[in-house]
Image (cartoon, rainbow, N blue to C red; front, side, top):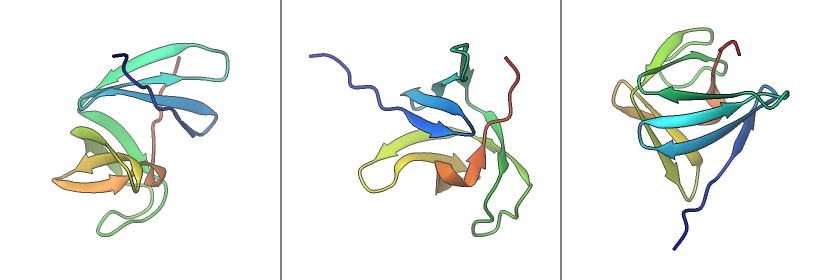
Length: 89
């Protein structure tokens, strides 16, 4: 049986989770980068104890039925919409 791939969009980039520790980022020109945990991201929506603009390291990824793509930061799970992946292709 084949594996289903889910993609999410953020800042004109597609995000495709590959495993609990890696994901693909595809920009608008079609360039692809594979990132591995820990992944450095910036908080773009203040959530719980993480203020806006704070840089964090995501140590694990998960897909949940309710919230879709989730990032684990400091042992707590957050929805992906709260963080931006800032990379150059």
